[in-house]
Figure: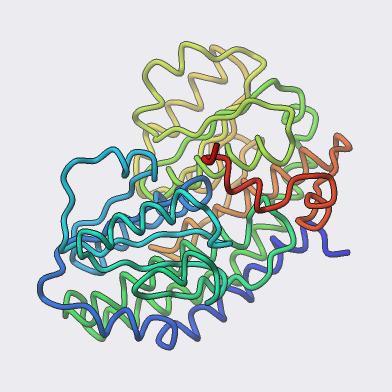
Length: 357
């Protein structure tokens, strides 16, 4: 049987495939971009939201268009909509009913709607003006790992292709960005291996906790949110939260005890001083903290240098996914496949329709 770990190790080949097929998958969308389009808005829930929080700053950078994210429930409570925006709705299975409701709302105002899903015949894809294949293929587990990384990369490449069409980015810079993306697969594999070693080294301390708080800045805020979600839904034993680096330095730090583990994602680019300051505070005053990535402090940290530049979030993603996997595995917590979940009474039709009465 394909394990959850196997799915994480499959991601490098998925990344290479998405990059190779980027033109074919985005051609229809790019052909619909006109001078009137002046904004990009991502809509999605759960992992479909955290991937957008991870990618949106770079989508804005590449496309040259203001870019933001919003949750479906907040989207439906808005009173002012930009009909000249490009609304992009992400749902791996394409069956999220509330996301479909939001897409229909965007269509009502005459805006361009885009669905990012795992295949062309999903319910969300069928009602959108344009569909972009996420490139994840079939993922055996409902607690998404492949889908998270696939969505991040697909969204970033959409922004890149829009930017090239709008001349917001030069051909030379475009090629350099693609080259950066292709550095990630080998790095991803090496970081997976290193994370397993790091977990074994710190296993007792990592497992002896009641909860986890994940911190990240820039694109790593999305990874922090996804890390918290993964630990919560995979292990089912911890209360977990993901913070944007600066925001999490305020009230939250007063609530930690020795029963909490703090995971600090540091790319060495944004808010490095906050990462080191938070680590030192927690270790000296509270309990356990681990820096992941650049500018580590002690031998408990997980040190590596990301090489993907703007795609660095894809190098941090396996760390939080691996952490959730090992926390579950080493405590004997079974991670059910989608097929197993359906057999015990959690069919997708019920799971994705919880908004219905």
